Length: 170
Image 1 (cartoon, rainbow, N blue to C red):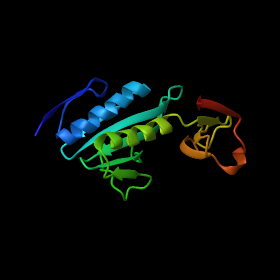
Image 2: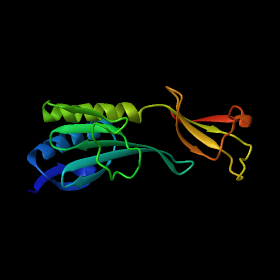
Image 3: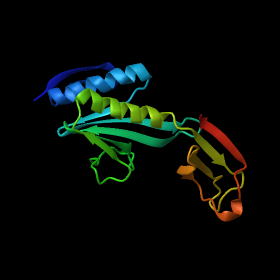
Image 4: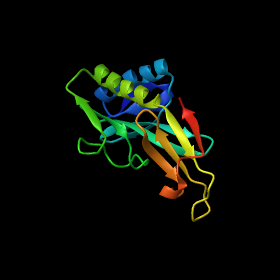
């Protein structure tokens, strides 16, 4: 069954069901309110949406934030593959779920999570000393918890603290 959906920011015109349409349109309304633009991949058994966080100076994606909706449950978390191919489920590490609530409420839960994650502070740690391959290492970190989210080059203990810390997102 193909259902018409109104979601210009999502660049889709149809979806799989009335339930999916209600979820997409509610999430779309939040994207308009909060000012974000996602990528979307409607699938036969679910709707997949993502927002990527990147470092434009280094031309790399740092985080792929993903929301899946299967008509009953919303799954949300960072996509560990950055490929959006595997289905999220409750066993996927770092993925949270919500179900058993009205569809607009499920969409708002997902939108709240996206907004919170998109606003997290990120820093790029840079070293001037090249590694064994000649690459000047960089490490990207979620500043609020100090968790590394990406790295370029090899950083060994003799590198010591970074030569610079650049704010990517405050």
